[in-house]
Image (cartoon, rainbow, N blue to C red; front, side, top):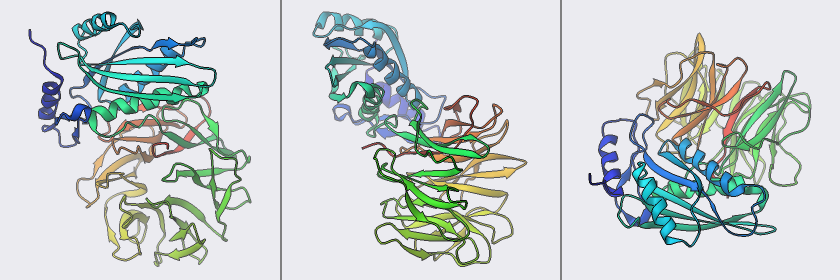
Length: 443
């Protein structure tokens, strides 16, 4: 039976994509082939990719990193929901065309459409890798991409994430989201610290260590800093931490009353927030460079939880000006306020990086995550118990979300696709984890 070429496979995936209204097809970049890879939520055809253990070219792999690179990169590709990983034991020897041909032939017979050959060189202070990507649907197993990476040995997980993101880039035209971080709140009642970890929950490290209650972390657009609310001085004040630098936390707002709900503008020059310094909770914008504040809302109701559109021209927010909290949108200067939702009680809006969707939390007995188009059409429920599901945050590709859920008893962080499918725990353990914020791709 004749095998489909990779181009034909992806073209077929595009035909499937047309059947699904939530599909966002993206261009295949490898070798300039003008086809599309279906990137809908779940239940559709995926590209089968072989990811054998990485081969050691030079140096000594005392920690078994070559095998772990393949495992983590494979997990990242599986998480993307674009690929089905065909794993294999043992590495393909380097610089051995016959061994490579045999391995790819065997993987192709097992159903793989593409193959990732990883090569690793171990030095005292660096791990150098080369990824080579092959089309296994062609008789000659055509090489379609190659790229080199290197990292200090302790950062081998990030090395694997960067390789996986490059594979996604080659098949979609947009990098993956594995080389990102999440910031979240961790701790028990009375003491909550901000923690950051890899997007998959690995490698948690403290962002704050002040022994107070720290809440609502939000990454800056350059992924250098995290804004958050802290009760360090006994009141809810706004701060900015620098997780990758040896810098003290910076105070952003410490007025009498509420200082909360920070939201970075897309250019990182301003932060929208909720302040009650003038008596009523209203939305203000802080210009970072000058430290000046500008008030956007003026209403007897409570206006809070701003979130910027990716263009920076609009801000969505929550207001109870109609009697119950609903989702509203205004322009960046505070004019043109219009309601986006009308039924239910809504909080925690987050605007998609793509600009087309806003997700939010709706309370109707329990709390669940909903999505609505930016024009106010097509509100739809993404989660449905058990327990409460709250506080959504977007991946930089606009395809994945994280949120906090009590479905397992205590609060933990889960991920899912934009259509609500593939809901998977990210954090686990006896200590609760809440309020996730997904970083942009790391520099």
